[in-house]
Amino acid sequence: MKSSALTVVNTSFDTRPVIIHAHGSHGHKPNWPPIRDAFFGLPPRKVRACPELTIITCNNGHPSMGLFEKSLDRLGLSYVVLGGGIDPWVNARDKPAVLEEGLARIDTPYVLYADSRDAILIDDPAGALTIFRERFDCRLLLGADRINWPPIRSYQLYEDALAAGQDTEFRYINGGAWIGETDFCREFFGRVRATPPEAKAPESEQGIMKKLLPDYKGEIALDYHCRIIQNIGFVTAPIFKLEVNDVEILEEL
Image (cartoon, rainbow, N blue to C red; front, side, top):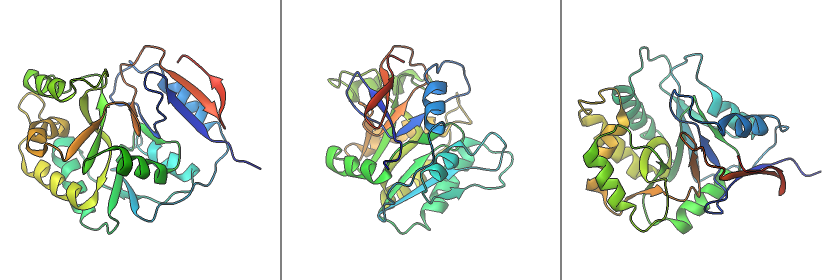
């Protein structure tokens, strides 16, 4: 008997992202509850592991954490949790540090990351790696966001220029989910760790990533068309439909 698999279709691009990230502590993510509930409403299933890829997340043990791991458990996937016991947690300080240290212990050539608190993996990570290798000419692929955060004008202008011609609203860095080459990610997050945060956003590691982006032309790319990563914060237009085993269950989210 075929197990039930959820597919989220971005109808703007006809893409099927496998990481859904409801970033930010705000209420502007109306598509998140139906997607999350549809996934967890299906029976657990086993998907194929990918021996070339390690899945990681950061979780200091706060009660709000652990959603990403729950999604991985439902797919029968193993993963590595970093940052346990760090309290208080400051993204700009702790996230780059634990990523650099954790990546040093990973021996697979590729790594996939998503935030523990507000992201889910809904399908085969091996498929995500295939898309990364075949569709993207980069070493690290970051999720793309509709919102420029921190709202620093110079970064917005730079990322707008990078996205020129892409015909997408998703054009700004979001550090909450990514996939890349382990060696490169280790080096990059080492630089993020060593770089002071933005004065206007002292707790944000994302501001540091934006600051460093011009140094990595051709090596870091954004998932402009949500082929792997879908950030759904501040998305209110009806651009999603949900399918289970290729049968539509919900449209025009």
